[in-house]
Length: 282
Ligand SMILES: NC(=O)c1ccc[n+]([C@@H]2O[C@H](COP(=O)([O-])OP(=O)(O)OC[C@H]3O[C@@H](n4cnc5c(N)ncnc54)[C@H](O)[C@@H]3O)[C@@H](O)[C@H]2O)c1
Image (cartoon, rainbow, N blue to C red):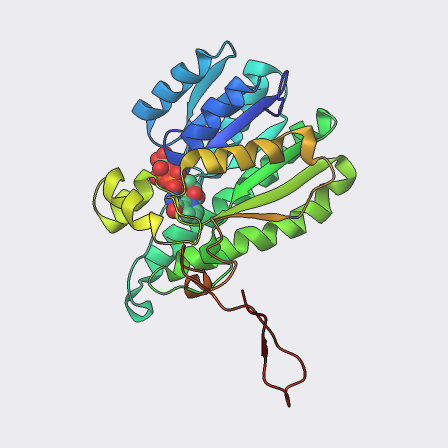
């Protein structure tokens, strides 16, 4: 496992899904953790569970869209643990759902405020304590919806594209301070955000996601936590400005291009187009 011994990490959206998995994993990897979320009941529980790994974890009630809350969140890390090394800007909502022509300005703005402004505010206020610590790693959660077009989640997809581009810009800004800035673009991952948007429970969402991408199982929160741990650790020291896609191959190409298991396929060689492709036999 990658090592975060002696490091201090903040994880927003830490009460649930990917943030929960990352909070527990980062604590196991040796970090002291600030779990930041709007959901205090689940956030307190995650902090308690993370503390059981032997490292310290605390919960900080935070609305990532509010600048005073982000300032208080960063101060909680530096006041409690004396430094800040890692910020995982992961909190998010689905936001405005439906046809583009029906999206209200208010719902558009609320989506942007959480999914994009929250990431900007995290970067803005994490930079100074990371600089003081001699460097750091800022990781944010984008989405494959921010890389490829999708309908029905217009403000969300635009915000997630913004996260990927802001990541590149911030990586340039902070490189000389040894602060690395990367993001993760998850595909469909089985977390409560999908239970809410698509309806159904984890079992149904898992079954749907199994068919969603070429790799034949549902994406799980731990898949994203593992990627975040890599980006948080020194193992990724020369990586900055990068968007790490973690999607079981969903954006690698169309799913219909995936060969069906057990189906016999012909082996041929296609030479110059005036010749017919030659059969290579068995
Ligand atoms: N699950 C997926 O398929 C998927 C795919 C791509 C990207 N994402 C992104 O991954 C991130 C994590 O989501 P998840 O799937 O774990 O969902 P989740 O709902 O389980 O976790 C999101 C957490 O963010 C918190 N949150 C929401 N608004 C907040 C705010 N204003 N301030 C602080 N906390 C807030 C929620 O309370 C929740 O604990 C989100 O940014 C989401 O957009 C999810």
